[in-house]
Length: 212
Image (tube, rainbow, N blue to C red; front, side):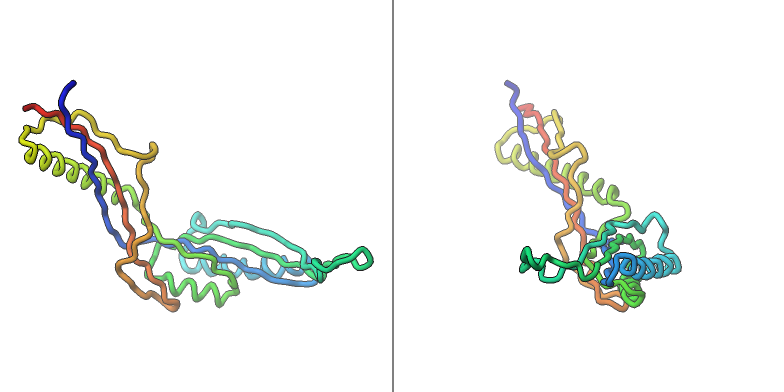
């Protein structure tokens, strides 16, 4: 069996996010379903108009959910003599907005709240060109693997030969960006928002021949 050295290299790239995704919504209660939906629809239309004025492209705005639910009175304490009654309806329209101008994130959130958005269920950060960061992370992973193999060969007193195999663990799409690290904090616009820092990680397994 040919002698080999097998090592795993890791690479990481940190980058400030340049895109944010907002999950916002409008909810309203009214005696009838039509009234509740009409109120919600009017507010959402104002939000759509505002986003257009802010330069947000239609492709970056998407309806996430749209629903109407009855409002029950004493539903858990109903009896055969007094069945539960519907006393109103709650309409809800949730949308997601991709914002590609991070400098205006706080301002946009503030304006949408002014326009009637009364639900903000999350803000996530990302990169518009993640492949560029992943390419650099993969390059660093290969450099790391080569350095480890050279160290092991030198320490063991053998001579490192050519690369036999390079494998990137994981699925066919490769490793994805990690969004957990927050190393730099900033406050933007009217609403304080910390964009933090994205970490893109890659891993590679390399097999080298030992020639001597």
